[in-house]
Length: 82
Image: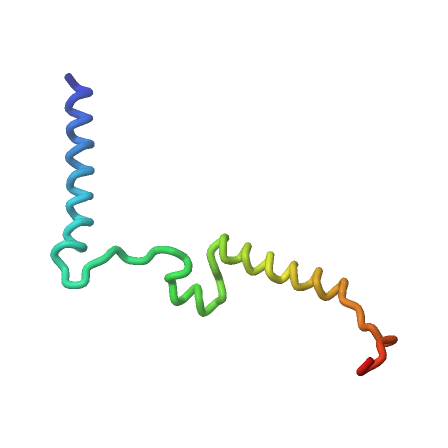
C-alpha cells in the first residue's frame, strides 16, 4: 500500500509540472518554450561558442578546404591562348 502512495505522489508531481509548462504555452499571448539550445543563447553567440554539431561541421569544412589547397598546384608551363 505504501508503494501505491509513492506512485500516486510521483504522478501528481509530474502532472503539476506538465500543467505549469502548458500554462506558458496556452494562456500567454505568443507563448512558447524558451529556447535553451546553445545556438539560441545570445551571450554564447557573442563569444562564438556553438553546439557540438555546428562546431563539427565547421571543423569538417575547414579540414576539407585545407586538403583541397594542399593538393593544388600552379601550372606554369601552360601556354596562354593555345
